[in-house]
Length: 408
Ligand code: SF4
Image 1 (cartoon, rainbow, N blue to C red):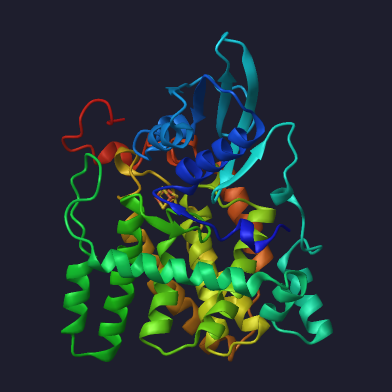
Image 2: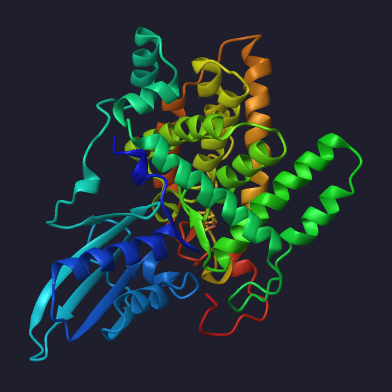
């Protein structure tokens, strides 16, 4: 498995696959070739079909600037991965200087054909969660200790990631006005927070605050603000809202939250290694489902759950999102994405509660590895129009008065 630095990454929204990954690829491309007169980029698959709503062309042009760059949305993709782009640079004589075929593989991670970058290095020798649990049990260590054994410098990095999550929610709670794009959706997190504060029931107040935090993070994401992949930007509000809630309302320390990020991170990493965290490959179960599993495991850890309870919480979080489709309206990461982050963080807290209470009565028969394999199998069965292409589902139901160029 790769480093957790490859899972948690800070960057501009709204989509790790469609903005963070292309930006990352272009920055690496610019390091590799000099004296570019102009560049041409072709987008394929989901990058092409939802690139407009995800602002992919804008991010690519901004990253190349001041070098002029054109972006073409193409349909005839000949490569095996469903989300990719071809980047070409030319000199003043119109000669091709460099061509890269880039796959956006989910969560802002990229693969560049015939290139071998250090970020693809394997850091953990373990292949699945069972092997990790066996290792922890044999060595009598916790999951955070396991992570920091293989990545001793990671706590400092996770501290920065925690800052970025907390700031994203804080900024989102102050935001007003309309979200960018043609849906004309208002930002509502600030109003939700005001509503939460007047609720008398402690439980209801906490749940409403969690919802407000998730909306705040994802309204920032939809506004191209800086958020953290967990495991993706579209699903970034689940972990960020949980961290904000645990820090500001429940009194957990930063050290405890850094450990919780390590626990959630290893859950996301196991899925990324054995299945996918890309909505274009596995549907929304691979994004929101995984985010819920990560948050459920983190919450179970913070509440003192042992390895089995943490695994059970993650398994519940993932299992009950199986089959969830990705059909963003107009190609924007707004509907159903923002609301879905709120629903998932509430479900994550409930999953941790269920694991603790039901886990004390009977052992769980479904392992986390089983549910990951099932998610991968299910994702392969979901039709292409329900995997981040905006060609079906809510995206074709909720067209309202979207202009021609964005309506599918
Ligand atoms: S529906 Fe889910 S997977 Fe699709 S863009 Fe929204 S959050 Fe991402």
